[in-house]
Image (tube, rainbow, N blue to C red; front, side):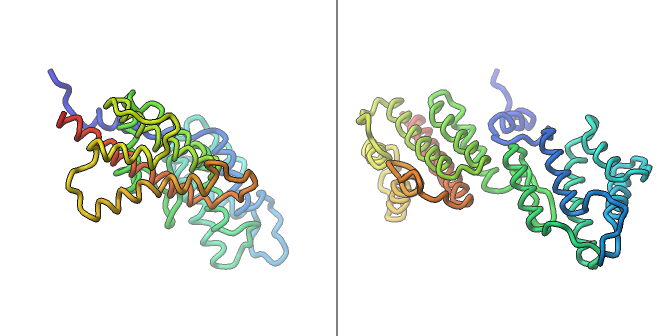
Length: 306
């Protein structure tokens, strides 16, 4: 009897193949979020700073009222900041409550800054940038964007490209490519851009070598991406009679990830080359996933023909 492709089974497969955690909040992340809140709301002092209409303690009190009302919990207000911190670190705190906490920080911060009653030690944009960086470093699959917390796996490119790619890479045939691609994501979370791009290139080449090995197609030990693509095309991995637009896509396969790698740390780049911007690593991850998915689907189609 064949196993039915039902929702719960697909959902469990997706969770297994994702590179982010969506259900458990790391303790270190709670501590870091509290520091972000302190940058915006102050240390909880009852003394009203010169030139400001309210004290830090008043802000924490307002935050607590807002927060605990949403959670339907009693709020004593004796030591607001400490009470909030205790609730944040409670083992009973759920992930949705933690995400509520993060959103409400910025809802209140924008309100008090807009009316001019408080001047924080940081800007809201800087605090948001730090929050997203902390989430990324922790492998916590959420980002704050457009005034809301969103799941990374709800983003179209993650849902339609990254997850299907990871599902293909779970095949033992592509073990090395899978290891390299997951390592690239790990470097991305740590903001090691050059290492991320290099790992992307290795993953791309590893998949092509795995396909060649699987089909018995010979290649030289030092073969580069361009050499491997040539072999795959000559052996018929890609559709026959491709038009000019497909030739352009093949050209992009040859130059996209390999060139990114060569320009950002691969094949003998100078060790003191400046670290590229983080969005370059994101581009490499997405481009690599698209290439891997295309190769995997082409291989699968050829397997069905054979």
